Amino acid sequence: MSGLLAFCAEFRRMQPTTEEVCVSDKPTAPFGVMLVNLGTPAKPDATSVRKYLAQFLWDKRVIHMARPLWWLILHGIVLRLRPRKVAHLYQSIWTDAGSPLMAISRRQQAALQQALSAQLQQDIPVELAMTYGEPSLTQAGRALAARGVRRILVLPLYPQFSATTTGAVFDGLAQALQRCPDIPELHFIRDYWEEPAYLDALAASIREYWNEHGTPDRLLLSFHGIPQPYEDKGDPYPRLCRHTAKAVAERLALAPEQWSESFQSRFGKQEWVKPYTDILLAEWGARDDINRVDVVCPAFAADCLETLEEIAEQNRVIFLEAGGKDYRYIPCLNDRPDHIAALAELVLQRTQPWR
Image (cartoon, rainbow, N blue to C red):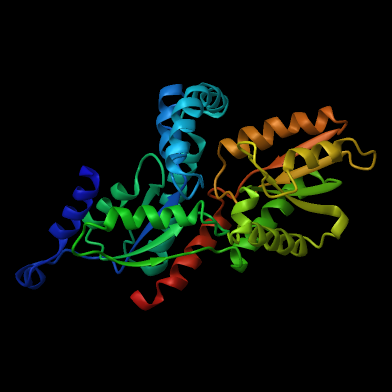
């Protein structure tokens, strides 16, 4: 609560009086950008992971279950058993710069700010926020307010909209601002999977990898999954993922038998959107005509636990043990120049009325 009030107080404090408008020569950017990703534990230990999971898994957007029942399951089972296991997985990918997701997100933040400022020939503030953990949405909003920003473009780094991800960002931001009597003007980007520059960057990253390492027998485009009931209730995410996969395959001129899309990261016992990445890779590994598989994860803007450990490591073992010969993971777009250029183009398109 204190964080939300501080966010509100910061925006109120930064509002100029008539006198301040007349005498202040402090430059004010036409807008600022809030770059948002999911989040990460602060450290790869059970305590930090438990804190992170407690916030993440309590979100109604993420878990659709009656709160009293889910509270009992979450605190009675999940948060007692899962943190130690997940912490071990984080330890396997942790770097000197910390969490890969955080390190990459910081590079994206700096690169996007540099690109926007260079193109507009003035300082354009870009602040990083995480839906869960830190820096929080409140902290990012306070940082933008402290720089005199009155218009904020919110860019969730989820190319395909889902209520579980982009929807959670919207809810979190609304909660952070609900006590403020004077809020900034906002532009919220819902998704960007159709943007040609994003699709071109994806295709270019795959093509460059193949130019260096040769081509596979199959390309698998693996997206983070959601429970099937979520799609049944109207979440468009799986459909947008399938459209994305098809658009990338078309750019690479792949025949239908050369590629497929799938969904990863199942949690719990309920049915999730299919096909499942691990099951499909096991089936491919058992086939005589599929020796090499390359996997790319278009729904992730930055490499993280789900790509570096689950896809690059766990699913490699699944494919090879099933009989496959060669398994390659193609990294996320991360801070590639064409990815940053695509994000900058998107920001400039949506902020044109503010300039």
